[in-house]
Image 1 (cartoon, rainbow, N blue to C red):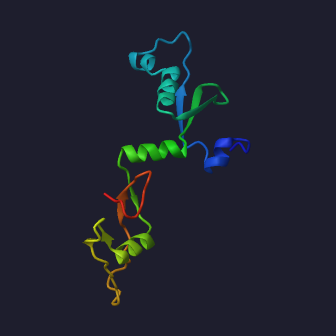
Image 2 (image 1 turned 90 degrees about the horizontal axis):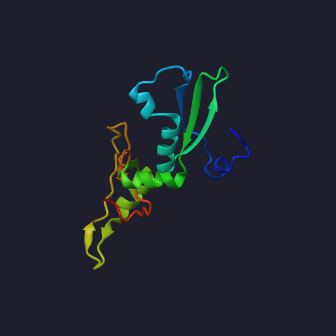
Image 3 (image 1 turned 30 degrees about the vertical axis):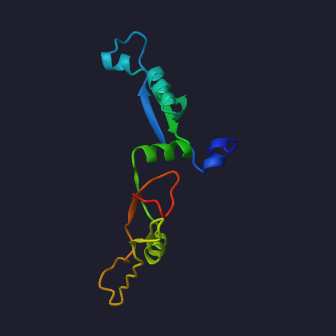
Length: 144
């Protein structure tokens, strides 16, 4: 990774994915799919999707490598649009369950609950494996 890369300093990660595209001689006849999916067109589509790209050749110059990455804001936006489900931290689920949830009029939507596993029958903890749809403005009181 490039230590001078401002993206890496801000997001703590660099490129996530790499596409290798074979380089053909200018004499080679390309098929329709190869013509329609040129390196230029792939890069344009990635840029329209706000995915950052960086290109280089392999040592033998027989492939073009396209490195891809998306900013954290772009990933959050896509997660919200696709209603991506993420696992909730068990301690947050437990605190929400023990607090319950009220409507604005102070009536209960659901009352506080407490789950104890005193016999240790299950290998999982009661609040493990809860998932919720990602929201950019996520708050423990606004879940789908």
